[in-house]
Every structure is written in C-alpha cells, then in structure tokens.
Picture (cartoon, rainbow, N blue to C red):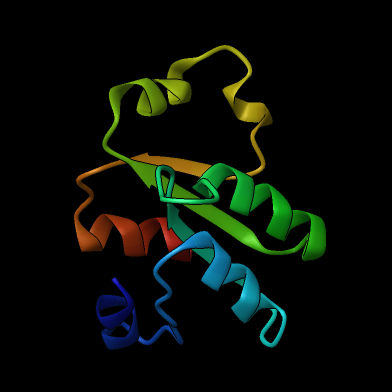
Length: 101
C-alpha cells in the first residue's frame, strides 16, 4: 500500500505492526493512519484511538476482511467511531478516493 500511495503522490511510510507505528509517531506526526484492524500486538482500533488521543487532527482509515469487524459499519452507533472502516479487499482507486475525500 505504501508503494501505491507513493506512486499516487502521497508521502507514505510502511510499518508492520502497531508498536512500530507508535514509535514512528514519536518522530513524525501522522496526517493519516491507514491500518488493518487485526494485527499482532496492538489492534488497529487501539492504535487508532491512541493516535487520535495524541494527534486529534490525524485522520484514520481502518480496513478488515473479517465479517464481524466489517459488520461494524452497519451497527447502530457506527457513526460515533472517529475513523473510517473499509472492507477488504479494496481497490487502490477506491482507497485513494477515500483518502482524498
């Protein structure tokens, strides 16, 4: 994804788990977090909430292929989440549309 985003003009840095993302955020304040929901260690949701606490203007886009997680989009109160939740697979053009909206 970082390569796709870079090719589309974004300054993207790939990290491979939530802990690395938090470490990077200590040196570079993120404008956008793009993360899977299910990861080893800290989950994407916990990572998102932590980063929003540190950087309230950070936009969060989470994605998942797990039906239970993607069904959160349809759950009552889903609009209360401070992030966008997308279902995998997502076409790169659709992802770019979400990031530029």
